[in-house]
Length: 340
Image (tube, rainbow, N blue to C red):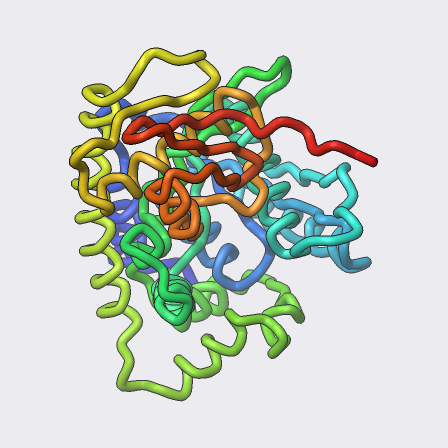
């Protein structure tokens, strides 16, 4: 086991701290989501060296593989050696009989991790997404004809919420301090520190889109993941600017409505701005009603919904009913379906 160089430690510290906002308490615990894979174990080693005594970590046991409990125990033992407090979180809700298993696992995992971080006294949660993850996400979304918000890919800093007991909604921020780190760098750190790791077999399953894009990217060395990541970062900056403009219009064009609903006037607005207002309306109704986000996220396609509203028709998305009366658009929770 070799100690990390001062250069690597300083680099991680710089990358983490530049993501902190003015409102973030700089001395709060550094909370890490650690799966046991080489990427998150690399982040664990870097953080423990950069912030000794301040790092906490959690591992989620999805209950989908028999080996998961042993892998979480491996992370716990490693954390103990590094002086990092660790907790294993178990998903208690079984997956539905239908639907996307990966989306279910991701949603439940993030809910558990965000609640854990808040209970541990921090409003920040770090994940180990790196440069190749960013490039894969960008290319996958480009192949699906995603718009600007989707092509911004993995955000270095993502303001989000989590439902707490009693139905309250609490803000929490996801940080990705490794987006400029290459996969091979993180693997070298794990090897240098002598840290154990596990390799999820789903990472090599060609049935999944990400696996296929990962293999394609590995076979195309002329595609620089860091440059692809910079493109995504530039698009994220533009996306943030348009979002700020839309926030102003949300206030200026907002009309009186039930607090759990959204209603505004889109007269004269370009479609691109309407797109942002629609996303904001969906987020508002989902969060204020404490509804499950399901497969809905900032990269979801809202074009069919926009088409319907611009044609004066009602439509639903993410279990939210959207309707149009002239230039006034209204969003509310969709009524329960009738059973016959």
